[in-house]
Length: 476
Image (cartoon, rainbow, N blue to C red; front, side, top):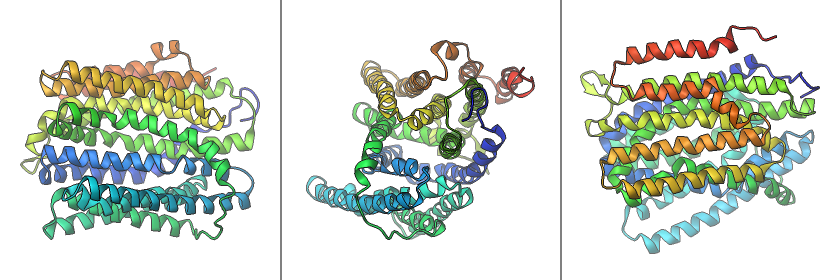
């Protein structure tokens, strides 16, 4: 940033960079989306529910074990001290590897004592490898992002996917059970991605001093709490459903979330570009936030609402789609259509939240950000427990739809509170925002029992009006 009124961001540059990140994300998301057809055929809803709980637990470990160190390394590498950055990078990787080994041994011993003779005990070595490679792989990934080596970062994702698919097909052909084959393939492909990132970053750790760890932990620990709060918003509903409604209901919900997550590639591609891009502008310019950033952010929010609302209309139709005379998703999962739109809506709020949270992190307001996320997480968990308890006797999909909407509401709370804390927008802005109303309209259209063409036509008309000011009308 420079002087007031001259925020040096280029929407064209940001969109171009996000598109480069997104090109790999599109390929990965598209392939994983197609894999849903395979998953719903090799796993029953109950098995899908168990798979969801296992992978959610791995995700929790990957969030908690790093203690926010990868994000702290990213902030450190953004400084003008390359030698100090390299020492922190090496020390961080060494520390994460050791802490993963300790956590892995502890988990293995627990699995021996608490789950003897079960699938979790059988899969525990693979789950440990999966978590370890994902955690340690964060360091070279951070390095690739901060250096804006977009092609290399994207190539590693694609390599992971290709190896995972090849291994999965090979394991299934060899007679390995569906859920076991998926977890083994994910674990080995995660290790492959870690190695590829190290090679592409030309990175071999050489300094193993832990002197930088106290400084990294001071920055990273608050971000760990932020990540745990976001985990509670994203995935705590799986535990609530599993505990109160059963494994089969959790399987239905997880299948719908797999479909909705196809919208995430756009959001994650933006965040991959936005975070280092914003930090670089802050480092090179300096100064205070100005009105031009607010205008820039409002343009982004409208664009997000257009894209995500389109996903809300289109994605549910894939559940009942016929391909070559067969349903895309196994017929026993077809009732999950109603859950897809409200789960997709959460990505609009999440995208707007990313804009504000980056500003708070760059300003060192990590605890304020953590408080914001935990307020929203508390809303989510409390509402899920209340809704699942009160309406458990009704149709299961009625209950699951309410839980799905709570995820969107929670991210809406995050969006509003974080943007206010970052000085971007007040509550009144969100009440009158064209983007927010466009997303709400698309959600309503998604539930109407009318052909997709009619819903899409209505969306096109409304989206055109919403975007007119930002894309075609010149500002004074």
